[in-house]
Image 1: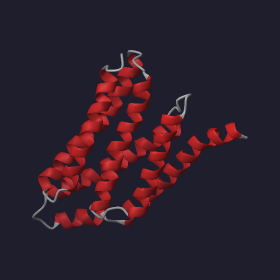
Image 2 (image 1 turned 45 degrees about the vertical axis):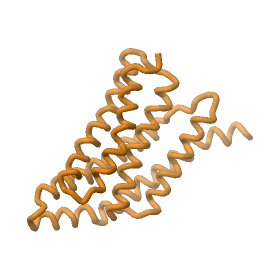
Image 3 (image 1 turned 180 degrees about the vertical axis):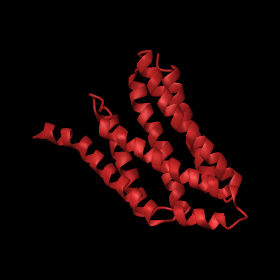
Image 4 (image 1 turned 90 degrees about the vertical axis):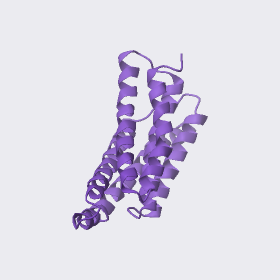
Length: 189
């Protein structure tokens, strides 16, 4: 049965993503704070769908496709939001989106169903932690909207630490793409 708890949770994560994005890019501090809560709910649903799929043996082909797709939607919504807010550069977001599109198309076209590698799961975890870090800074900054602390948090959000952390994620993202492409090219040799 394809519509069980893990797939419902992944579907909810897909549904949360555009709402999260709109709240994040809003210039209204309370909406940006709500976006943090939505991201946390989306991230927690990722943990729960995997937990239920393993515990109750509810793995399905739909779930194997839907879960990573929902992750990609949520992280892409965050990265595009960060781009619009001027936190990260365009080229980094393009590389991440391109990698996600390529792996999604590979999954759709591969009869053997490409499995998510451990390295790709680790990459997703690091991406979500990075996104959560930036969102928490935005949340705290917006609590202090009328004070000097607002500027202090902005200096952290728009810092070299943020840039180089994101750069490391981009490098890991590219490595995971090669991890997926390697078996395809080896089959053809």
